[in-house]
Amino acid sequence: MKIRLTENKLHKLIYECVQRVLNEGKPGIQSQKLYDIVQKYGKIRDTKCMDIHNLRDEDIITVMPMADIRQIMSDRRYMVDHWRWADNYALDAWAKSNGIEKIPGDRMEYLELGNGDYAVVVINRNENQVPGREGEGWDAYHQKREKRKNDKVWDGKRKYNPKYKRPWSYSRMWKNPYKKTNWTRDQIDDEMQDIRDYYAKGDERRTNY
Image (cartoon, rainbow, N blue to C red):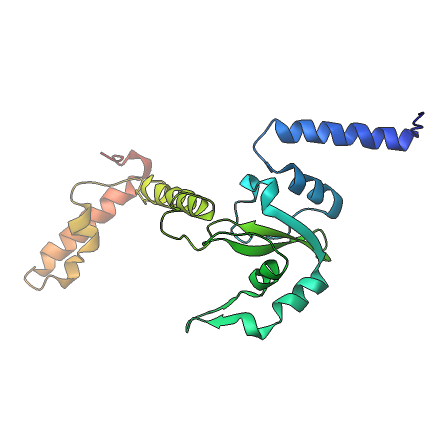
């Protein structure tokens, strides 16, 4: 059987092959099924705090028009009121009626694609962080994000260190000498003048100890 390739088809084939090689050679979407969907329908518009890079092929269910997604999600029978927020289980009910198997902790989710006309329906593993599945699925992603946040807080980059300071800076700058009622007028003037003279030195001031 002969296969006839036009120049455009050949260019497209080469481009797709190169993209697949690049995708395999760097951290990215691990699911080939999701990768093919993104190539066809456009990039994911909002990850919804999901670890899309580690989704597996078996987590990818189907692609649906957003109009159908909205119709499913609008079923108020599956809206659960948690007092402070409401949770929509309509997609989970849809999955059950279609024989899609999940285990306790898993939730159904959709990710909009391209210009928003279509969405891919996926299983977000262990979204509910049930006991016994610690470090699995969404819980692993949550722990990773929390660790990054804590590391950022404690890495010292957000701590303000003034360029110039001296051991007495706290008592002089944060405790206003004008509030010291037991000081004489001359003592207050001398203290404030000393501070002015120190900062008037500019770059000649001593730097951090």
